[in-house]
Image (cartoon, rainbow, N blue to C red; front, side, top):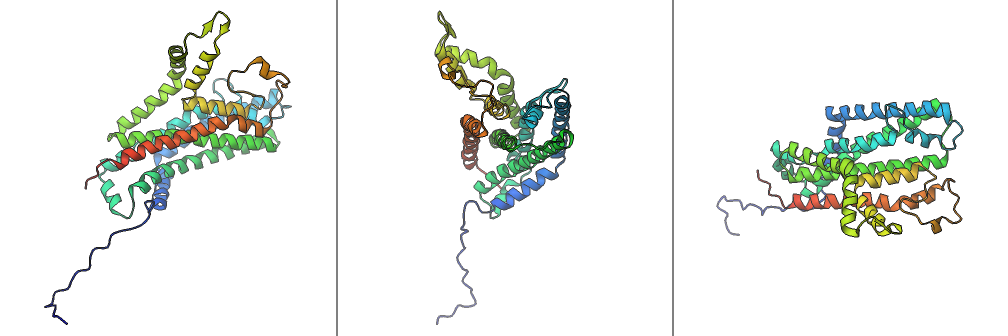
Length: 330
């Protein structure tokens, strides 16, 4: 046996192995706890809760005065508007993007600015788990807030209307809740993408707000112009051109606001039978004004709901690719 002369041979370094999702649960738990305990989230929750509950309360007063015999009282609670406040769903469509952008506009660039990104990735946490955990943490925080708001409105309706919602109303309201979460997920993923692209949080926030303003205010103005360039003039000597109408509808549905509005319309207005142009021949035998079963309404909004979920996946995939190609130095 050869002497070692007091020299100890060091063991070869052990290479860390494991799933690329190692540490995902820890990141999700930390991000969710940070969001739910932050002053930013509390201010946003107070803003959304106060305005939404005020709109729902005014709708309940109108229902008790004029629509007490409606078979869909709880759906009316979400769709009725009373000056000076808009309806409950209109407020959610306006406020949810702002809350989502506020949650993730500094998710990645904030770590770079605090010089903590290299320290986090030095732990047994991979880039995949970090980015996905940031998104899931924000989505879980938003979901908790929306579920609490949904239960609060449901309890307010039970207390002031004095009747429980029917099974069909509950199904429709649950579907609307899922669509709202998917709608918020689109803006979470978009703000996360800008957080990956821009190192300055203010620039990322302004870019996300700019996209929101484009879809919220200017998209309805741009849609007819783009449809005119693609499909030609809207009218002919025989009346409106169906090609122009269909092209305008396709372009309009590139906006998540349009997909969310159509989903809310079909779910919360049971008499809605179509979400696009309908020929007179297609209405033969239809009982106009009669409510559709909940299952038929879900079939009607299935493309819109799929579009919202697909938008979340596509935007997050772009953010993932960009983040994987970035250089991170200690």
